[in-house]
Length: 289
Image 1 (tube, rainbow, N blue to C red):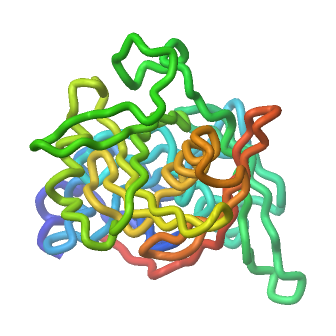
Image 2: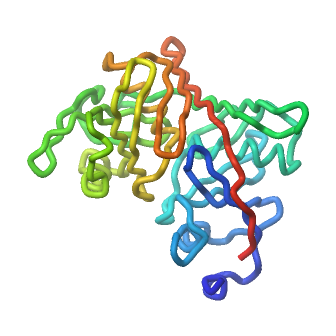
């Protein structure tokens, strides 16, 4: 691979994994060294000249938890959290022999996340992973991710190119602008997504979810991810969408979310403000650059 001659001083092993189509390149820091993860993510994420992915995930040791996870978007920017990647990390550390635990504390930039693994007793393979995603942040006073005098942003009107969009903001440790609308399949997401991502309301940019309510227990979603563009899935975005729909009376606090890459199960315990994400994870291939 030609790009290896450009910036690698040594050969590095990696594995590619996906959760609901949200694909990342995973590097085990117990075995490999990464000096410049931002540049590495930009190079390897390129789907024409690199490996191709939504970004880079580094799995390493943690003083606070069992393992640490750092995630970098395809443009090299570091994100706070990715629910689909967290599920993949759970499968990785168990099936690659880094732990025998089925309850794992994963340290992320947005805090410790608890992973609960469902393991097939016959194959000893991880079939499903539930992630305790922590609290949904609804108040502007508790979030650095958006700039507004409102205590909360619910159905907040924003006009772009003469069209009005109603945004409900939810932070899952990373920012999400959730927009409920019909006909999301016809949406020119590559045009409107960047406009909202870079809107002055969001000084650190934002992920953008376009959500159609099928019924109170079923949602359909497309996502424009900050730093990566449209992806097949976003775990934190699915969580934010269910919470946003619940607080605006559109859907139940427990619902499935259909994304381009698969289906995720979301449950929000509104009394204790805890969000849970459940889904599967898959190895795609391993390689060396």
